Length: 192
Image (cartoon, rainbow, N blue to C red; front, side):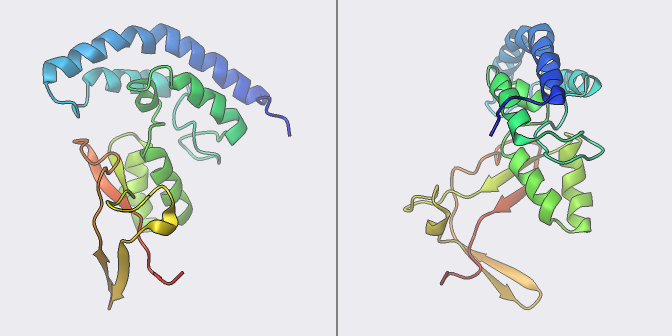
C-alpha cells in the first residue's frame, strides 16, 4: 500500500503549511495571553474564531471527514494523517481553527454515519459549522476503559426511553463552555 498523498492531499498540505506559518504560529502568543487573562483553562480564546474564519476561506475546514459534504471535499485517511501531524505542532490552536479537534471529529463522524435526520440537524450541522463543541463520555473509574469491552455503563430500554446507569469521568470536551452534546459509550447488551 502506498502512503504517498494524492495530488489533492499534497495541495492541502502546501496550503496548511502556509496557513501554519502565516497565521497559526504567530497567533500562539495571542492565544496564550487571552487564556492567561481569562484565568479559566477552559476559556474559548477569541483568536480562535478569527483563525476559523481564515481557515474556512482557504478551504482548510473539516479536513478529517473522509467523504464529500458541503463542508469538505473529503480526504482519505492517508491524505488526512500527514495534515493532522502538521496541526499537532500547535495542539491548542490549529485543530480548533480547522474544526478538526477531538472529541468533535469522532463525534461528527458518528453523527454523519449513524445520526437520524433530526440529530444531524440539531447537532451535526452546528458541529460541522464550528458553532458548538461536543464531549465523549467513555472513561470509567475502576476499569481499563481504553478497552471498550470493559465498559460497565448500562443502557436499557424503558418504553420509549433509554435509562443510563453508570459513572463516567475524564470526559473529553465536557468542560468547554460551548459543549452542547455528549456522546456516551455504554452497553445495551451486557452479556456480549
